[in-house]
Image (cartoon, rainbow, N blue to C red; front, side):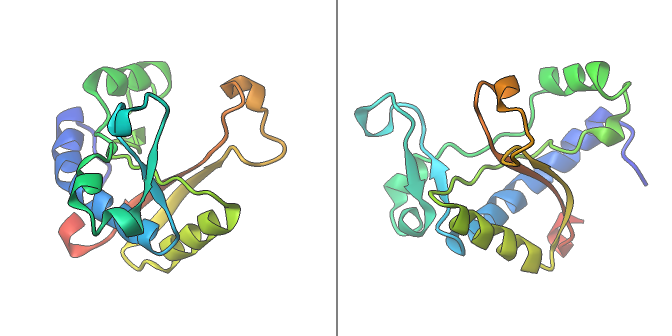
Length: 156
């Protein structure tokens, strides 16, 4: 049954966050995926990324990764009021991770890994890479966003 309480949604997100992080690590390992480093890592203010297949063997690099966080309560309430008519069941992105790729082929390898993962169902795809997407609306930024549902025993 759909979740109808924001408190219940946050309780579930607290348990699912680590599971999604582990999934993202698995998918990044299968696809030459990278994760962002904390600001200032390596002495530079420019965004930096680390290839997960290297960071998994380097505790210092892994410790510098900026993992996605559970959506803040302020942002959740804002979305509920502005976009979802206070329907908590429509908040689909409470737990978030990002994987960065140097090539479309690597991104495709990740999508294939996600598709093969029997513990995950893709619920929604937002493709801002599509030629018809107006990137002016996002100041030129483009990405591919997935909403997934975790099906593993640990997720239930």
